Image 1: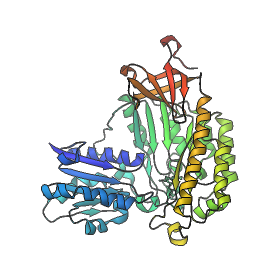
Image 2 (image 1 turned 45 degrees about the vertical axis):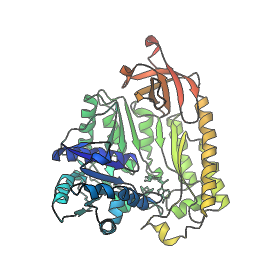
Image 3 (image 1 turned 90 degrees about the vertical axis):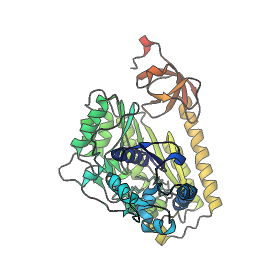
Image 4 (image 1 turned 135 degrees about the horizontal axis):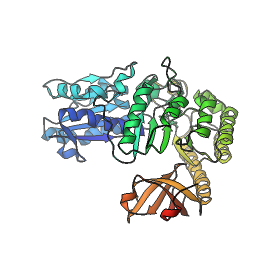
Length: 447
Ligand code: SAM
Ligand code: F3S
């Protein structure tokens, strides 16, 4: 058996892609290893959404140069968003690199690795596909490694946010056929998966580019009937595509968890316009209001960018105000970084000084800590339903689970309960997680 080491950067989509890479390479008898030194094949699955993604890739490759000098038959490859963006340039700058593959080419990886093993061959494959079959798992058997599973439902994005590189590196929207998704989820549930996380760059525009396909809410409705499944989540959504039908799904589908990640990016209409987000603040807020009317108590999370070109102090304050107004449960906040090919990088100077970006980022994160802590403290004494996912990071025999609203809860309990949906009483709260006690068996049915 040969050994495969995969280093993954970036989002859940990339993690999921890496799982698929490992599956495709089983065809060539590669088994995963955690140790780059003992690998016969090293693959770097990259992300280029933010920061100095390219430098990070070149320095990781630098660390493996020595390994390659010692073992000429070692194969090193780069895939994912940076590969898509840099292409042949990677081969030019890294003479010991053997292979480059883009975000749509994972299904061909066994052939590309075979080619890379031949003397003098350094394949580069970066083509985009519109036919969704490239997303299918040829083995047709999803792997199960716990009670939760990722399921890709679409790839790419048709929006044109001025800061974002995704449409350039992941292509235009392509949705998988709903019958394939439904049968995959059914099979996962049959194998013991209790929760699925539907993945895509813009999942709520699912199906829009495929004639006759279900809408996203329609797909959720179909998945809601699958036996054995307990929870459905999805990420990421665009506010413009938060349709009345999807809002209604939150009110009617019992498996759909009461949590929505809805990136707002900025609290200032002027910045949103420069970002080309396609909505204004009042539209965003009225959609949230409707959602909260139909699904009271729904947890919301968001993405924030600080220091977008031209962001004044007043525009930044508007972002703090939106955090206070919406009271998100969680936020992911980033300093703006210009990305190659994007409109913002072409037309706006990156003029907010880095120390100002840093201060704004800290202010946003500090404010959110207060809001999250307050919201979590309100849960004290409440009974919540959690899905136990596995051992807690805190160790000491604790297990970790999540509420339907996506809050982490640490509890003492036997490992045998992993995979159970169970009632807990909340006994402790910090900004980032909760502590709970398992209810006695006769109390565990959560109303
Ligand atoms: N589809 C999602 C949406 O509707 O907004 C966004 C997906 S993007 C991969 C994840 C997040 O990264 C964005 O929401 C944004 O906050 C952040 N991001 C993207 N490009 C960025 C950039 N150039 N600088 C800083 N943050 C960025
Ligand atoms: Fe990027 Fe905007 Fe699409 S943030 S992924 S272009 S919705």
